[in-house]
Length: 564
Image (cartoon, rainbow, N blue to C red; front, side):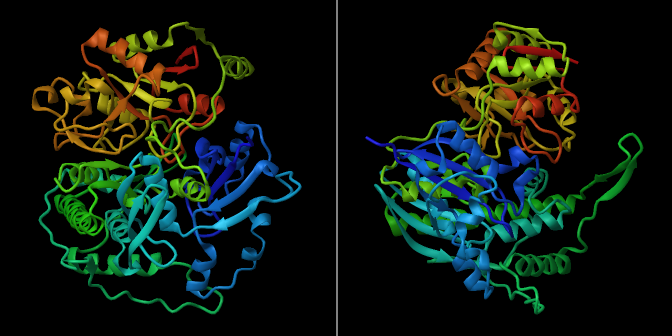
């Protein structure tokens, strides 16, 4: 029987981020990657996923002529129509996504534009393994909404309710993030900072009701010029929220720029008052309270206690952990790519006649490199290295001695979390590991780090834990281990763990097991292998460049060990 290949895409030349491509073979994801990893530009703003498409096709050893359908995780025709904008490129989508100067094919596959939040919903439900589920999607904005409530049943998703753009939780949290002085795509930093404050401020603009919630604000409309109509409501709503925050709390937190003569450029430095930490904490609690109430409303509507979450708001692991412990649901599933990366998978899954029947277990879907390929790169650059047969044991010993190791193995992960293939690793038992890892990546020292546990032993160390293969749930560390594993404990006693399973990542699991034999603890510290402001490394060249510019001690790449 002929294999059904379906390609899912995210990306556009304007006002998009996290461009990606996903390839299905008979309903199963065989390759998936983000464009940012190839072009080395974080989030790939306003880009088409040309390199990600090429990788996916190459991985399956096919061409576009073998692809039966293409789904895009945005309905750009609806988006442009809603904004009242004419866009000629919509009339020839094949030339936009598959230009002949890049791709060779005889007949371009049919391209279907999928509503954004339906694609988000599909990226979670069809990978969850649930036969029935309540599905909630929340982000900044889709075509004409900011989220949705849906019910998933077998191979069907029914949208029950849409959330208006004015009520966008994503735009609210992004505005708080900007108010605190962070980049607008840095909501995770606001979440981390929130643990240092107290939720003493109320955002009474949010009203909970029997249908979910609403936001009582009056967006200040900017008059568009004749040659510039906004494609979305982000600027208008962010401006509205920022005006409200400044009138209530005072001026925006602005960074100081200090010239670094060694780097020959200015370095951005942010500091925070206790009030600003309290604002972050208050915004975090608002998100948690609103979404918890929304889950209660949604599960009552669907009469189903299995929850699937997606959309950028679902990256909030603190909120996710509290939802799991709320008593409102029985099970939760969040894919490793709940943000816009995932709509490429969702779009493809919606178009497939075959739907996955089992729980999606691994995000290792990107490029991989053999020892032969790695050795060639090392030799080309005259790198001094040592070939090690048991690289896992060697690295475990280094970690036990307190060394920081850049770890490059297997297929690159898809999604914003490094899950043991493109990671920087450390010893969780040592007081200074947290500081060393943040220094290694030039990160703020107050930011938390994540541990990777052997899955079957995680419950011994964490309160009310559940499987967290994609590092997207937060749990409390049991008090008896907080001082014994200081590097993994955030200021509030929590941690964002990864459950590592032997069957899905045997090499990483083996490393952790060796570390347990040396230290007594089945866990290592794990942060993503990338420099500040850079995407996670993709290939051996990226790994070498990042290693020699970071402050880690060793690079374990394939079976080769490199020491600075």
